[in-house]
Image 1: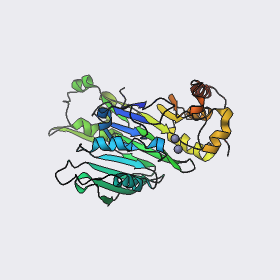
Image 2: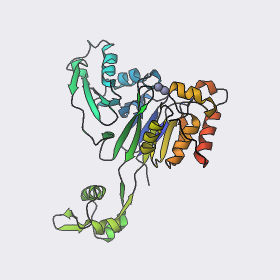
Image 3: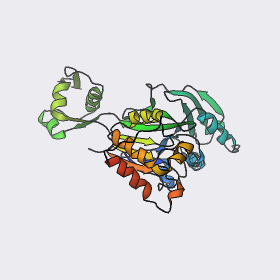
Image 4: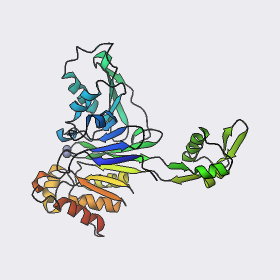
Length: 336
Ligand SMILES: [Zn+2]
Ligand SMILES: [Zn+2]
């Protein structure tokens, strides 16, 4: 089974947070957070179509200038989604540069900034290069509740966590994977063709077995026959990203729901459990909690990050604590 995306941390866990999700096909990428991105090449950044920003503390957004500058000469749009107030903040940043050299002959790069309130997209602003990035208020797209973005192959689910301010956490959820056994197809006397996409879509939408798929002008097939013989159906990949969240039960419940049975979880582990008072004071998770959340949610692979610089002298302490908690059967209840 091939994954839709290959995710990786942008930086080492003591540096700015962020995950780069590289699509296996299509020369495309998504970013969760946009802190220091100097570790990414220009070519990698130019593949980015969507950026999901948890909140605008500087370690999560300082890479905006580099990405924006690189994109000025590309025709494909860039979509950025953040918490309430985000689109206005993006406008302020854009207004702080001078754009008199742009005109109707420029490449028409478009940046779209959207606010997500914890349940849905509530505000949109577009900036077009040919309009010298003048503000254009637009209706944000409508997705089901709890979804910040949706396409044919995946959705990005999103919850707002409490970090003193709202901090968004994200999960890329690939829709069900439907693969074709080519050999069986030939045995069944069915030619490959675009009708297969229609069949895959019908399986993903949960159409009944009796539903008939049109293969050609003079051939149809029962979806059930096709599904049970020539198609292989498997759950899609889930990649979750959780950062900057106060260690309390309200956040815990939201996180558990979001990361449920994720294949890969990137989660902040800022302080050791022995320094819990610091975690509570700065609204961050401890390494122990990060591991416990991952274990309780049935996560397969855990990657802790966003380590406090106070542990630079003992760099293994935070991942060790997170993995110990992840693999142990013990629980430690969070403060209410
Ligand atoms: Zn923060
Ligand atoms: Zn942070």
